[in-house]
Length: 66
Image (cartoon, rainbow, N blue to C red; front, side):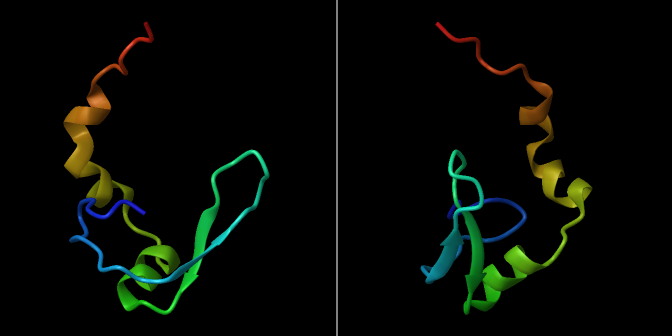
């Protein structure tokens, strides 16, 4: 998990459980005893609230490969 992503503050170090759902994909964080991580993993967050911090980035075109 990114250690600083809006709208959340930097996360403390915490033990989490990662689960492989598809062998070709990155594992998903699925469980933790840390309250802050548990909220992020267990709640549905309003897209507009989360994405507003990245509006300018999302408007730009991705860099083209060289």
